[in-house]
Amino acid sequence: MRKLFFPVLVILFSSCLGYKELPVEYDYSYRGNFKKYRTFDIMKPVGFDDSTMTNAVVEKSILSRMKFLGYKQNDTRPHLIIGFKMFGDSLKFNGYNQPDIEEWMKGGRDENLEYSRQKYDMQTGTLLIQFFDRRQNRSVWQGYATTLYGSIDFNNQRHLRNAVISILDKYRFWAEGFVEGRVEFQEKELD
Image (tube, rainbow, N blue to C red; front, side, top):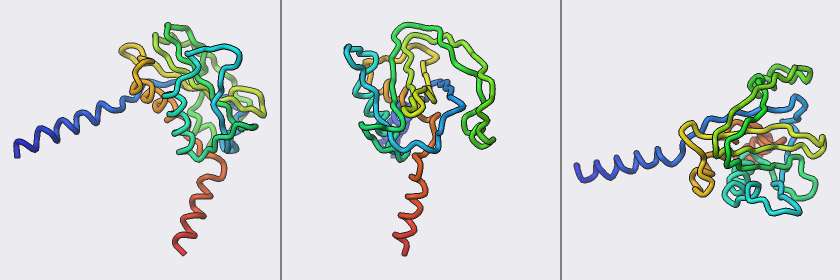
């Protein structure tokens, strides 16, 4: 029994270390059509090589999360263009103090609310993910994360995945028609 206890304890402990939710802030545009988006693509820098805006681990994590939410990747005229930037240095960042996005959606989506600016002092190692509505030509959602105890190590794949997961956990909108399509599909399977 003792021989089995130690390996089980190690497995349980190591699984807890696999994902550590980071503190995340996000803000959004009151003009975002969050329930009307179906497609997305990842923004690629053009004309210059900026390693803070391209990273295979971040891109793969974003793709995985968006597909989970039912969005389809489309490189021609996507509804959302998703960009990200990794900030190695500390920075002062302007965000907004807003109602929780889900509460705002339930409350009738008042587009006339005032934007209350809020300044953030971000530590070194901050990841910013931004959703851009291609049709409106504006940013509609952005989330940003840094750790409380130090920086996100951009050379560590686990740190990067944790940062993306932590940020995109705050964006909880299914692609338009995805949930309804799943219900119809499940009902057909039951018949």
